[in-house]
Image (cartoon, rainbow, N blue to C red; front, side, top):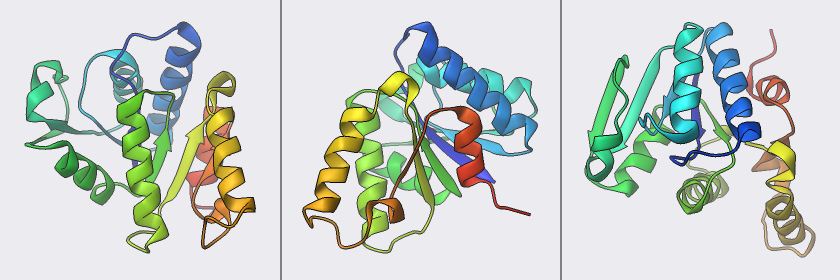
Length: 176
């Protein structure tokens, strides 16, 4: 599988780095490829390093205005002009999407893929990795949208939440 991971370009505290490291290792050990924003900094860099160290192919998709943060030594790096094109390429090149804790960019990316799923543009699993309750508020808001009728289908048909990288993998890997 090509697993897209949305994450942060900021140097975050250890619990967030540890989760990125563990998820990256699982992606590699389980024979998958990492599709990500192409950066070498923050949890973007941490997950790419761990994935590659454990045998994953790395497919980076980076916007030209942040090319100076590009990670070297990847299998494939695609440079695009706009963030909209980056989001489009990330989704097209992936089989599932995992959302690590992040800021406004991460929120923008996941909102875009959730809306695309709502409109039937894809059926890929979208899983939030809820490190230390980071996405509790997001889950609460999405649950409210679901309960109060703002979603045409049940929330679980759009997104799932996991507390550990192992749980993430169990939600996105096909059962054989």
